[in-house]
Each structure stands twice: as structure tokens, then as C-alpha cells.
Length: 163
Image 1 (cartoon, helix red, strand yellow):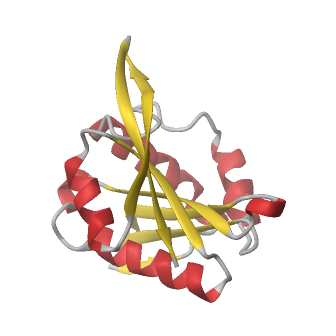
Image 2 (cartoon, helix red, strand yellow):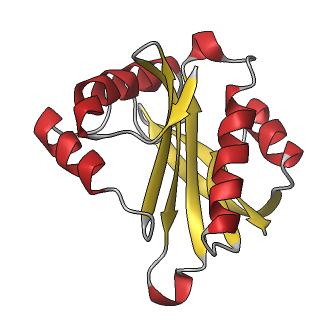
């Protein structure tokens, strides 16, 4: 498996990945529909990613994207901090991919002047919270009714890592 930055040519595969990972879990901000973007929009987005605002790493298993992580920096007075997103296909759970992606994101943050990483997680997602604890993240707050799926609400938590 290769850990790399995606490019515009990855647009169709990225859309396929997001639909797949969204269909496997209710822990993401989207479901099986993926993100509301066309292949051309995704191509433009992937081609425009730059280190000052947004960075993405994908896990490439022989041309198939099987995981990804992103950091999105805040504007102006929030520029020292970044929001983390991370996911992997269910069939790849337990292979250390989440840990490797976390290592990559933390290293990138340190090398690029990010001094705080934030994330949001469903309160009942113990698997993800164990990964975050492993890397030193701490719970910083609660988010009541953070997510709504099919008319049912789920609480969330805010976590952070000071670098």
C-alpha cells in the first residue's frame, strides 16, 4: 500500500471510495450518497489542494483508494489549527492504516506550523476514540445532537491534540 497525495486523475476513484466508505459506516458526515460533487468538480478540487489550507493523504492499494485523511486549516486567527478527517474501508480495518494515517497527519502538522489538531467524533464511536487516545488526543467537549440520520440524533464529542 502506498500513502500519497491525490491528484486530479484520482477524481473518479475518490468519488467511488467516498460512496463505499459512506455506505459502510454511520460515523461519517455523509452516507452511501458520498459527497455532492461531480467527477469534474472533484478533479478541480484535488488539483487545487495546497499546503496552506488543505492537505489530503490517500491509501492506494494497487490503484484502489482504501483510506484517506485530511487536515483543513482555519482562517486568519485560527490558522495555527486544523480540522482532521480520517476514514478507511471496513475490509481494511485492523491493518494499522488509521495509525499510519494519523502519523502522517501529525508529522505534516508539525512540519507546517500547525500547533493544534481538532476533530469531531460520534460519542459512541469507541473504535475511533481509542485511536485518538493512542496519539494523545483528549476530549475537549460535547456536541449534543451532532448528527442526524434517518430522523435519529446522535451526540458527538470535540477532541484535540496540542502539538
